[in-house]
Image (cartoon, rainbow, N blue to C red; front, side):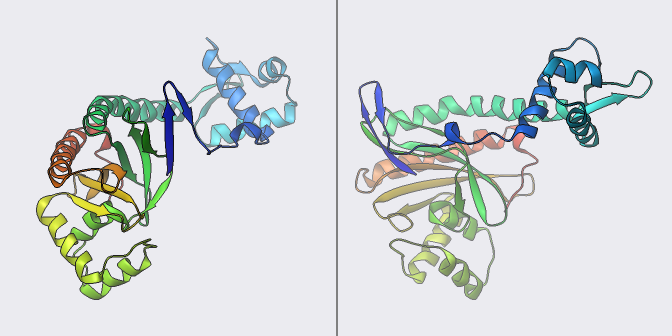
Length: 275
């Protein structure tokens, strides 16, 4: 998470990704070039044609192709000893395109909510049993706002989303206290207050964290449930503490709940992992 200060059309940020300076891994680059070549070709290509076109070592080319064939990313025709794009590549493309298509359906609603309340709206997916992963976010036109990074992770029991997860967990008080204690709160609530907020989240369908997980940051969250009835995704509205009235917080919460319902109707997310 970072704070971005906008000056007209320009954005100033202290964060640098460092990807441009990273040293590229040559075998990975070669494998991608092979896939690009095969995807452009109107016919299957032999090893000789591929390595000649890409100017790579034949033994390296063969090793790459064998690996891609084993992963079903590339197909091999034994009779002609030639290679073509495999079904695994098609499955990858379909997954990405389907996910992006559904994100594009959600993005206008996210942007509208962000602009209406001058907050950052964040879309989380479950990464594993311990973390959420940021899948998308929308910014408002506010001069000072909180910006997130695609792919960043959040402890699954932390903040407003953590209260939602806890609310559906059916944990014993002892087990819930252990989860609560595992979070690195900057301004921790008491456990009794946390339990009350967890119960409220389960009852109301949304949760609020006002400066507990990150001091000075207000977070409002609503869950998206998978077919199993467990949380698969979540939406956050994030801003600085003290910026919103109780009425605005409730208004945001209700719109997040509606946004979550829209996401829940998207078939592309029906098979995602849940908590």
